[in-house]
Image (cartoon, rainbow, N blue to C red; front, side, top):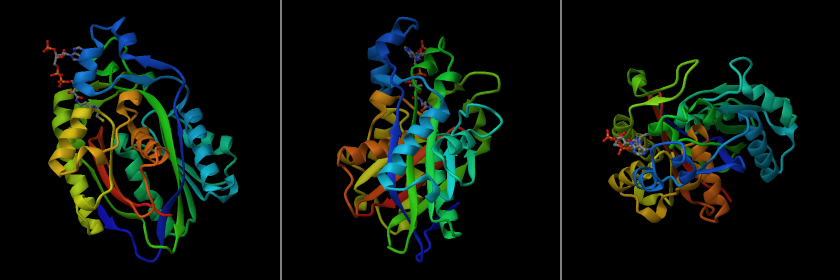
Length: 315
Ligand code: COA
């Protein structure tokens, strides 16, 4: 599904926030209980450490609260809360309802699961609601994947981490903000990456790798075309943080130079729905995002889903 932003009402990011658990688990820590090594994990994935702990609700609340603060908004200003997560705290009710209550919001709230593409899906969903009349949407990606990892399985345990990232999207008549998006899903690829209930994450790593590179390139290309720009116009590429080799292979094939690519993977691991907003917030906090910059956000994940979006940064 692709669509350009309607040129009468725009969705700008005006607030952002990050939450990561305090507990750091290094590759050396994992090597004590698994047949693995820092050298293998670093070379094959780019991951050095990951943060573990907390609840999806608490991480989402912390990131969401920071985003409200940066936007200078009070809880009553928010018209909708969207929580992208594959790891809700409970099956019923939605974790977003607990987040809504904890943040003091008075708006509708829902969870949705598009796996690691969830945050980019959420940008498009938020924009749709802004076109339909909402003025401010709080979009959070939050995960506690450590609860669904088999800590005896070296092929998956080394990859994932916990965390949350959030943005406020505000309606504006000023051009910019979300310029375009491209969303896709292919349910025939479910067997590549899944977690039954009850159960833990199982994955065909090599096949995911191949599909991921192709999906990222297709989603990026479509989002760029929809925005009427090329990869050369992009100031920063903010990809889903799953594996540094996936990121560099896709970036190289797309023609994005390494200095334009944002990576936080080495200290976060793969945090699924939280990964792209974490990378976005880190880039903002590092001073890498300037007014007028064009950002290409691109993700892929279980489903398989994939999604790309072009975001024009406001002032
Ligand atoms: N430590 C040491 N050895 C490991 C290991 C680990 N943590 N995990 C796997 N191995 C071993 C395998 O058992 C295999 O051993 P063998 O040759 O004796 O059978 C060998 O390393 C190679 O395994 P392979 O799966 O081919 O490695 P790889 O280079 O493809 O790397 C991944 C594995 C998982 C890192 C990589 O495929 C990947 O990142 N895939 C994408 C996963 C992903 O992004 N998932 C999330 C999507 S949102």
